[in-house]
Image (cartoon, rainbow, N blue to C red; front, side, top):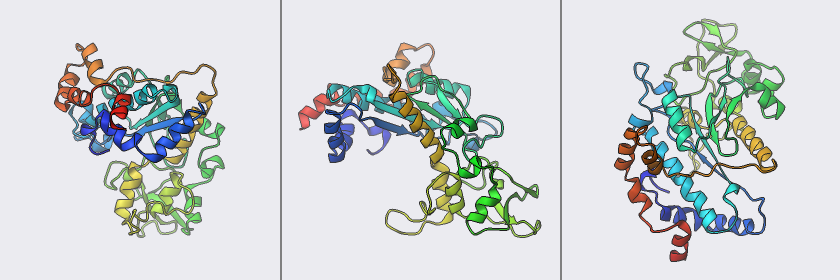
Length: 342
């Protein structure tokens, strides 16, 4: 699609809805209203995350150069959902979205909720100790159009839906996982405290970030011995990637990826167990009589103007982005654009 700040209605049509595979799904949807589309978005979290904080302060949605891209999410969601509605293929309630991000300040949290049409997030690993789905924590927020009220998600939720790591389900340890990868006799450790580690914090892109010192292993009988980072195959296992665990080993051209870059990829990745749980919750929503999905009613600049006393900074920010210019770049709806270019 290109850079988010240049995506217009016509861009969405040309890059997505002119695709042969998408159109084949649309033709199928015309005959079968059980076809559902899921849009997943993860705006950059560096300006929101504590790992990126300076002196304990995050830049947030309003001041961050990257996380400010969040405001493009409701805009693009609106473009896509109105396409389905205008083309009369099937009802927009068959279009769902999942917007993912990290723990953030209450102000940023409120902005996310309000601009996503008052949807509250599902909170994973916000319980004491975390590690709800695996022996690795992955504290995340998920705004889901099919679960408007949000709520806390813990181990019992993953256990009930049978989508937790086998080691978590069967009360195994990190040492058992290392043994499965040919590292019998090794244990995870915190070299700063010279302590054994029994559960891991949320993985970040960089080993030097706060809390990442626990991502080290050593031989159990050599407390003063060499400490090394675990193979990325072990991390892929903990995050739920299927065996064989080489998903981040090669790039699209078949070239090997160094461990440092593999860590960055995994630091940005979704935990597979989380996606399994969300899809199962979507499945339940689809079969719930009379369920309603969240349609993004207002474009960001419209909502900011509607509540101008509350969001004067956002009004200025959106003007700087030129949202009105983007929305007026093509007259009418995506359906009309489609007719004009077909």
